[in-house]
Length: 323
Image (tube, rainbow, N blue to C red):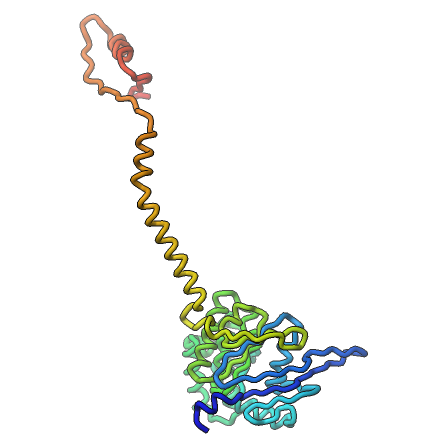
């Protein structure tokens, strides 16, 4: 099939997906008739509050949970009908995962954690370690390869998680609240890293989040409410591009800069008038004539001479060097 034709065909097709959990005597509907199609290379965000069903939907697409009703087709395969063994092999071949809590093995170094999926795939140690080293350098952890998770910050651990998810170049990467435990600056770094990697490798990236700022990186945003897709936003015209601002942000900042420049010009033009007004309104300051050397006449004390000078001038006080 030609590449352009393949791009027009969804790689994930979900119809009538329903999931009901039984808690004691109560039944909780987590998903209620979801219909969804995702295409190759798309960055998709499932956006919703806690308990909306977004993480359950991701787990269904990843084959981690079985639906109560409905179908999930990925690359032409019905996940809802696969055995656990076949599902495990399918995930290993086609999927990568980034978790909120990192899910790194604490006793393994960064390089061993990243190489783990390749080990499960049967790749030789020398080759998988080479790939893991390359990926760790790509995410900025070239000097942390031999560190264990407890020796790294949260942001560094998530970088290891991203390297592990992308090292096998899976066709689909699932990211469940990938920045939930990170500060704002690290969140931006992690999001730009994941989006850049998925773009470069033409991978489909599916992100689950409650944060509208994270959703801004997606091509499409699906709003999940009470187990249903309430709406879909096509975000491609205003999404955040790694290394660049969103179109709206760039325009807003350009407008603000233009307004600031205009204010500066107006201020510069008004300066002569301001100066003139200040000069006209300034009170006249008294002109004090300098006092020349004091000539002391015979028979007259210096104190008497100074008093005579002060009486004929505008000087009200005089201080000596000793004071």
